[in-house]
Length: 460
Image 1 (tube, rainbow, N blue to C red):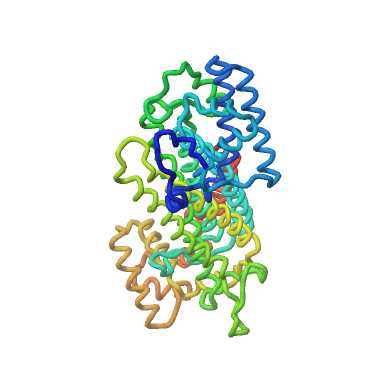
Image 2 (image 1 turned 45 degrees about the vertical axis):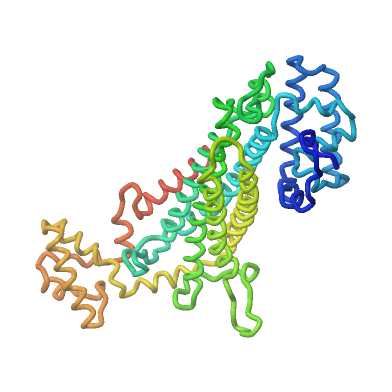
């Protein structure tokens, strides 16, 4: 097949080069955006009188017919045509003849692919935002059910202070909210039309870029043609947002895996969301959570892959930029598989509040509350810390919990502890943190309301 760019060459391209150079095997998923961009470009060429209006109309009709045939599965793409752009142009030429060659007026594949990628990232960002929003709603629903469920809070994976399950779940809600904000920021920087930059220096034809931007729903046009064709910052930002989202899901998945162990016993996975062992009949494995945990590494790889491609590229377009597509396609597929799966996992999970409460017994996670009680009696915190440290040491030797100490035992360490018994109750510990961001039931209800407002406001 004769290349659309072959006029300067005296030899046919090697088949080996054709296969190595071609991207149609993966950039075919851009076909809808490529046709939509070409339709807008053709209409602009006709509107501006750069090509005759009847030719522009013929091109638009031809492109729309190709789109219908692709949707119907009637189109076979050709590796020799290299990429989705030239495949569609070849198909157009077969349908409407020489007039198809006018479509590429005032345009290069360099600004064409930059356009397609921006349109693709915008569309996928909206899908991801909606998927994450639904996951957030599930977390809010769970939090509302567990405002009163007290559980250990951890630092260094050691019991630290009592919290509520609602508070723990909402911590992930706010992580996801930041994820949505990152994607929204990325969307705004992606929402820039590069078409009209041509190969790198713009075009001498009197095009109307603002018209094309309006046709395609872009907020603004690019300021510098060299930057426009070589910029992939928006893809890097998208992959970074995806990697951070993956990291957040991985952290939560790890906790579910831990909580699902016999040692914790805080949760039980629904049978529909677990797997068994081919050897051990008793096993019920958290494979879904484990895969979500692992796929964070895949998302990291997508990000690092593109950063490595970009790090040494001189201006402007280089063929290296063909390598931007597979990482972003993989990241989209991974995120849109993991987020709904995670939502299903947590919606079907069974929490065991009684196990969480039992885990608090004798764990000394209320020690800080006794220190705070001494501070409320005028004792400097560092002195109070030392006193309660000795109380804990005493309990360990006597095999007692803090709540089991009577007034006499407490006052033997400090007279000001004589009436401190109530301060050592776990429920009291949670309710005592009645400040914005704290664990009290009142503050949790305010936090849930803020979470609902955040979801309602949206990010995109």
